[in-house]
Amino acid sequence: MIKTILVWDAPVRIGHWLMVVAFALAWATGESEQWRLIHAGAGGALVGVVAFRLLWGVIGSRHARFADFVRPPAAALAYLARLLHGQAPHYTGHNPAGAWAILLLLALGLATGASGWLAYNDFGGHLIGTLHEALADGMLTVVGAHVAGVILGSVVHRENLVKAMITGKKLGKPDEAIASAQAWAVPLLAASALAAAWFLSR
Image (tube, rainbow, N blue to C red; front, top):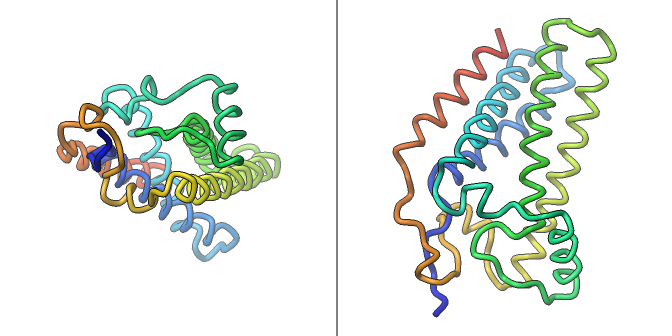
């Protein structure tokens, strides 16, 4: 029996939207020397969210764990092929293609933040600055692909995936539901984002 169940815990949902805001703010301020400190702080916050998400992917609730949703690249390609034909199977947690988008975003978030910190502190000169911009462009590309996948998946599965990342609720079997929203971990997420924002913008 399929019903609406709790799938995404609070740290996953809040971390997702913090990444959205941090990346958008960093992107918007990236070309302005006047907003350099804000740019560095936003980039640092993004790194802090990513660091927490990597930990939460090991110790978090069922559908937050990498072991639950990371599958071989071939599975992601097969899912995409079926999705384009409107025949992709429904996944209660992340689908195989979405899983790889998440891994890429986490990796690019760390790499972009690290290169940005080096550039902010005048290490590596023009080469590091160019690398930082290229990584940010790559991250924007993956974000675009992720958004397109969310829209297409929402249409094919007749399920509002954006709303699910706000409420935490999706369609699934009762035994696939998580026990609680794990709200106790949200302060740890916030502390990680704030600490990284402070450190990387010093």
